[in-house]
Image 1 (cartoon, rainbow over the protein chains, first blue to last red):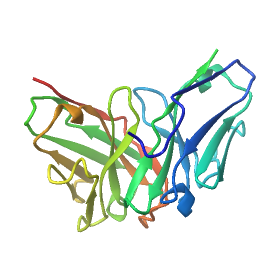
Image 2: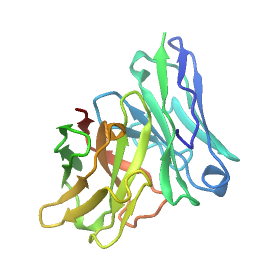
Image 3: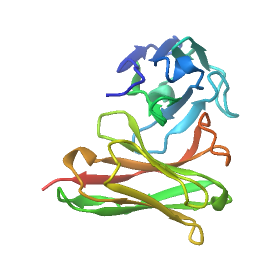
Length: 111
Length: 123
């Protein structure tokens, strides 16, 4: 069981927006650890989508945005496109467990 | 191009052993920590282990302690994960990845990742 909690699935129609939550605790997100988000197409290498809570690597569309508050973080995707259909994972460092944590993953379906 | 390529996965019986390899290219391999992360089919990602740039510091998840050993050969730009006493629950795709910076800062994100290698533990 993942210590970072994500909804198993979200869906939205093309052009709409969705938000994926990532809930942690006082030993990881709440302790000030950064949250990073990855996009993963099955069978391929995961790729960072958002780093340091809210920063986008070059090449990532500004339709993707990240935020963090308290013990939670969120990934927002606006203007959904068919190619956004993938699995999304949050990641943070746990200062009590001294290990890197990932969320259980959220499968995005574009209707 | 910065690349990581895993190999060595396969089918192994419960209690058996397997050694995974992670071959790196396109960057100064001997400056970076390398991590292993696994994904059980249909489940999320789980951090497994890491090794520092010269191989003198290793860290393991509780699920790997005492059974898995991470090592590296900087002359070959390769990291290894020796897995012993394998269990059905170790069945997963194993990825190697690298913190974006060589400092080993805990808050760094991982980039790039390899494509993964599938380990199946079954009789």
